[in-house]
Length: 379
Image (cartoon, rainbow, N blue to C red; front, side, top):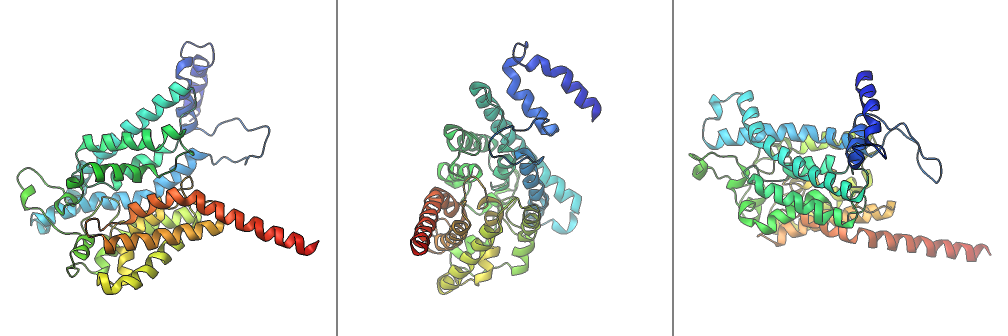
């Protein structure tokens, strides 16, 4: 690492003011701070002096996503070989590498397009490169259908970064979760590519017509009995988005986020509580056990990795409880009353992203009123 540090130090003057590559200073500092902790600190104002900067926080989230990603890659192969009827003759590595062959191009496209736009925006503004896309670039392919065309993923990613982030000022200024915005753009622009049963299973030109298997959410929306057990939905061997099927792997990621204080336990807990309570109320309609709603679709994934986004979620402690409860409750309501779109987690989180500042405003105003009352009593 000393060699790399010395090399960067030698190249640094070229990117400083007056250097022949000063126009690319933001790109250089982006790579430098990604590799090494910055050797400068703030000198005024109220700031937290800590080595854990935004890049390292984002990397912790990426690490937390790895279990769900690896299982999702395996599950892509598992569902494919199961659908074509050769699962018994296929070993673990064949399933995994088939899934990797399908998923890796999606990840590459997401990062190339998203980071390319982030780099260009930083250059035009003369700012340092934002780090937020380290997570969004991985989340976007994990919540897409495995058979999504790469050009659609590229277009959805560009929309999310430009419209969802850069026009608001970049990382930390966006109103909505960029990854969910990419999925929303994909869903409303190309509904046939995300609403069918076959899109959740990877096929090939000779077998695509034969591959079709309803997800648990699709079965619930159609009023059909579930053909998947609770164990299937917990471990994740079911059709669905790449990273959302395994509740177990999502909970492993949640454990890391909670142990490192990267994500809010208040939001996670309240999302599950709100979803469970509303599921109890809708059991006569959905004919699905309340706890099964928490295992289906992207509920757990959204609660852990999407709803807890510190930029777009509520900031006050009480506000986090309200925000999470409403997300969980609304996700179940959308699932149960809208058979055309059985997965309600995306819309619930995006809607509550919109109202998160309003929730915090009411909480703050309530605190102010209580303090004023206490001040009058003491006087």
